[in-house]
Amino acid sequence: FFISSFTASLAYTYIFFIAIYAYIAMDRIPIWIPLATFLFMVSAFLSNATFFGVITYNLSIDLIAYTATLTEAVVFTLSIFYYLRIQHRENATLKEQVMVDHLTGLKNRYYLDHFVKKKLDALDTEGKTASMIILDIDHFKKVNDEYGHDVGDRVLATVSTILSGAFRKSDVVARLGGEEFIVLLYDTPLDTAKILAERARYLIAKEQFDIEVPVTISLGVAEKESTESFNDLYKRADDALYQAKSLGRNQVRLATIGVAKNEGS
Picture 1 (cartoon, helix red, strand yellow):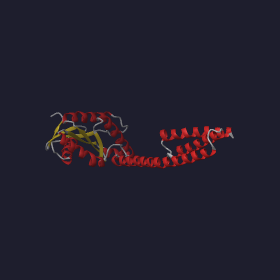
Picture 2 (cartoon, rainbow, N blue to C red):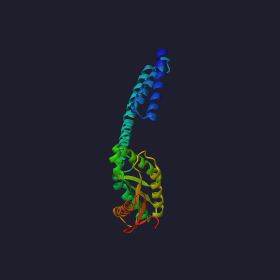
Picture 3 (spheres, rainbow, N blue to C red):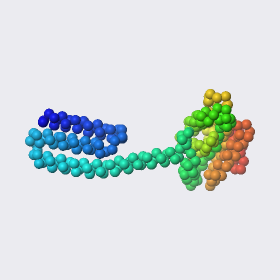
Picture 4 (spheres, one colour):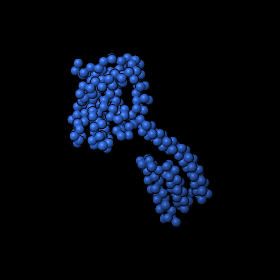
């Protein structure tokens, strides 16, 4: 009896620590598993103590009952927190999925509507500026027509990766839809935005896409005026983009109030 009881004690102890490790490190099992194992471990040790006469049989039974009640209470309480944590993580994942474009991994229109506009308003309150870049991929329809949408999607994904690396961590790079993208540069004047836009244009132009259609981008850049709305800022940047495309593409154009000008002017 002693050998089998002692072996059971060691076995339950081992299983208990393995269960604790799995719960903490792997986070794939509910909390009741290690705690139930703890109850078995305590019962086995109490059986050993009773066998050696350290405690009486009745006391052993009382301690087992007490341990079982306490374990049940702990399991119930911690299980609530466990499932709340799971629910919180799932909600965070769903929230992130709503704000992210699934093809490119960039932020999407939902993010722009719910967060960027508020951020621009906050910058106005703080007396800080911001710049916006609107860009799209030149001749992207030709890529889709000649190579198919699978290749087009690959081009979009590669361009998105390059754009993410071309801008700073504080900048927001988002896909508006199709081949059109937007970049928000907080607390950034026009001259700095122009440099970053030109860097992005250069990196895309020198990338090898393994297709005969050259992949380049055209960009329009505008700096936010005091109290200017998101839509008005977007309109000026988009007008600058239109000029970049109409003047030959693969270039950066800067916008002023009501007028777009070349980056060198």
